[in-house]
Length: 291
Image (cartoon, rainbow, N blue to C red; front, side, top):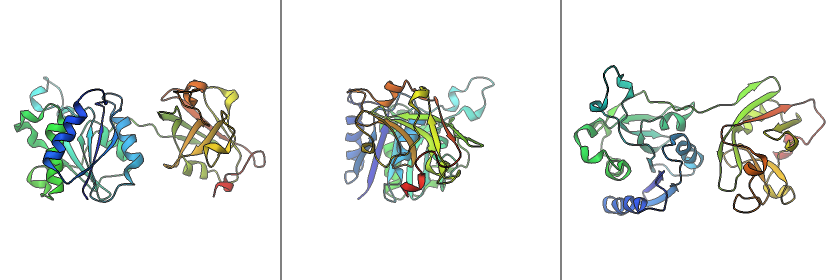
């Protein structure tokens, strides 16, 4: 079964997603279409990268991912006098871990990869010759590229190999003596606060070292990592390592549509700092209990 995923900032109020899927069914009638999200913040390629990377490893080899976020090309005819050529933005096909990502080179690739490198990267420069593809790229350009990928058409027949790509700014934790300073990188529908701090960052300090997680409201510090939300009473704050092994701060049974998620109750916003301070042994629950 050929899997095609869709990630976009189109929302679901309008007909746009239906139009994309209709074209997809015409061009690849046997493909199975899976929506990652259509509620990406408009033009936010970093959020799109986070959403796809968080579930990417769960898809089988050969999956093709289409990213319809900030994807209009910036072609040579748009260059102003003195503007460098690296301002140009073309559609790209990236091969990574046996899967394919079709997107524009607008920073998404760098945000998605982090410190990793693609297995191969191709630029669809031929789009200069097809102005009918310049608008609604997800529908009018990316589906055609996906069709070529699924048909195993040689990439060099319609693209050129490249090694450079743009990098959007993605913060990484600062790790100092007995201290990790991370950032809130995503707030989900429930108001759960997801950080860029990984379980492996904790483990660098040892599995038995006590710690305190602090953020906007210092009286809401957390000194325990729980295995699940229900490890604490309903309405209490909780910290877990989610399935992506990222530090997540939540309210058990809290949600923004109900009693309020962690972001609202704690006054935490996207991009704000989260600090993990490690202390001498013996004062709080050990991380080794999670293993």
